[in-house]
Amino acid sequence: MNIFSTAIITIILFTSCSSEKYKNIQVGQKSVTYIDESRNRPLVTEIWYPTHDDFVKKDSVSKKETLFKTIETIPNASLLGDKLPLLLVSHGTGGNRFSLTWFVEKMVKEGYIVVSVDHYGNSTDNKLPREFVKWWERAIDIQYVLNTVLEDEFFKKKIDITKIGGVGFSLGGYTNIALAGGYVDRNKRETDNTSDVERKAPPEFPNTDEVIDFEKDSLIVSSYIKYKDKVKDKRIKAFFVMSPAIGFGFHSKKQTQSITAPICIVAGKGDTNTPVKQNALHYHNLIPTSEVHLFDENVDHYVFLNEPTEFGKKIIPAITIDHPKVNRKEIHKKTLNLAVDFFKKNL
Image 1 (cartoon, rainbow, N blue to C red):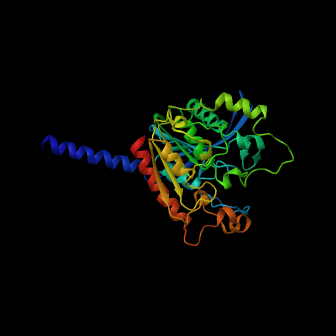
Image 2: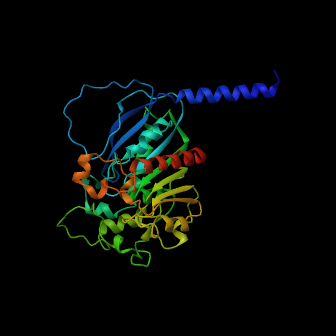
């Protein structure tokens, strides 16, 4: 047998072993609350990871009706032994750490550890008006959680620190662009780049009698000055963002000039919350390292949330019912194909 033949056999065996390793993967899950004491900020976090533990189906009990379909996981399961890549997930305005479990499940089964955080004051069960406009603090949340997970005894020896990626939807998309090195300019708000939709408060904004001057409030202004352009995280090597928001806060390439990591932007041409002209395409034009993929004019903003239940469609149709020509599951499948290829190439 010659050297060439031996090399081919070695490659085949290696490929076979690698694919075997990621067969029959189940989704392990840990729930934890980290406290960023420097900002008095609790960060409820979910961590999903690959495991070969067996899933045990529990006896069916009466369940509370859910708005979105859920995934099957194994709480506190064991973790595969190799060094694994890590993805950090940032949800949209008023969403939560479970908003993108369709994405999480697939990436875990591809061999990733996936960490998702509830952004303090801007999540489903914790809405504080000030936190809805302190967008830049979300990037600090992700950095703090990354620091903590990398020191966690259960995970730290299993994470490949050279392969860390970011994922975000809507405001979470902006969060990732901030982590990549982009920063908003609050001093120039009303421009041609701001749509009528984005001048209004988002539909998830909490009802409140509190009067806040968002331009002069000392807590907002001081936070902006402290963090606006200091959140780039070089440890995160690639970013995948869906329907990114806050495009109106970006007016020049100066605000994105420190971005060097690859960014994949995915959105629907029919997005009525974060119109692609002022957001996805606008970011793409400002960021040299970006690529953009647009679904057709029937695909709206909330298609990137989990698949809804019939109960969810009745309770919150605005974010669960898509255009008749749109199959949310198919959009998810196409998006996941893009994500898997993007991270394989860039991590």
